[in-house]
Amino acid sequence: MKIQNLTIKELTEAVGGGITPRMVRHYHTVGLLPQPSRSASNYRLYNQRDVQQLKQIVALKQQGFQLAHIQHLIQNESATEAEPTLILQLQQQYQTIVQQLARLRQTAAALEGVLGRDQDCQMIQAEALAQLRRLEAEGGFGELEKLWHHLDVETTSHPEAFQESLQRLLPDLSDRSEIEVDLLSKLVLACGDVSLIQFVRRSRDAIAAARDALKANCTIVGDILPVVSALDQTRLVHLNCQVETLIADLHINSAVEAEQAFWNNEHWKERLHQLPKGCILVIGYAPSVLMSICELIEQEQIQPALVIGMPIGFSHAPAAKRRLMKTDIPYLTIEGTLGGGLLAAVSLNALVESLIEKPDCHCYLSSL
Image (cartoon, rainbow, N blue to C red; front, top):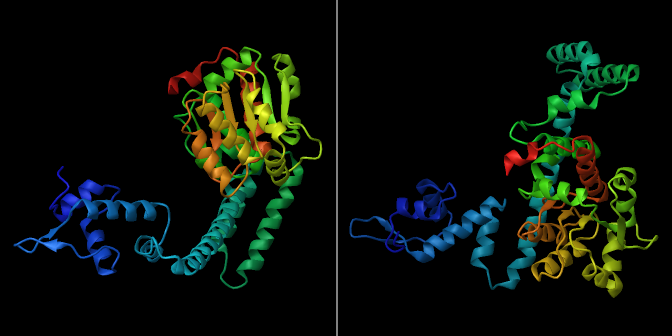
């Protein structure tokens, strides 16, 4: 399509992203888009610059920015005096979203309290639903406390049946392989958050690469000792897989300490260059370790079989994970700030267990 003298309909088709002519007219009204030139018949006409600006607006909107903030961003690209005000507005939006998430988490917890009941609690579950129907507006909070107390008492009569609860709470995973479903279930049980599944990302060949590497007695390298300590040492010994720690310092036990240690000690950076070909890397704390691994992969200086990249962090970690997902190396990660050493270790342990328990399973190949 020629990007010159476009009608409003042709503009929206060129931009895509679900944008409609009505939305474009609204952006003109609020001053987000400049008024376009007009044809002799009074039709709006758009050019390449309009297409690019509207694409920018759509991209920022998809990232969650409000229209007022987008206006600040695109109209003050070189103006630093507006930045403090914009930062304050973004902080306020962030706090509002966090509050909304907290309320949604409270709602999810209430639903889990009813739906997550195992077979032994079915009669109690039915009674809970009946009580919820009869709940009166006056004194509702007090009655709810009595309801949850009654349900909680029932939990002392038997152990929790995790798989039964997961069957009611997990989203539809019928398009996933049996091994991947097992992996996702274990991640959920490790953190208690079913929504985590929406953020787990893996390359198409991740499971196959992990199984091939483990069968070949590969070396497993964790970023710090707490990650290595959480690995299933017994099963790894059974597979003749050696386990190593990158930052082998007993005093390093947190993401903050791991990040600082990696930056301040060249020895740990040098160890990255010595990683054996075909190893599996399990990164659960330091985002800069993952970033450095990605850089070495891009430079073809190291060639791991699989990277499990799940470091914690609010700026470097999301960036490192995005970079990992662009490499040609098989990967398993959790998008955004979510992650941690336990989840990274659980991921590897699930893959190890599935290989030992089902060595001849090829269900994961159906998704390749």
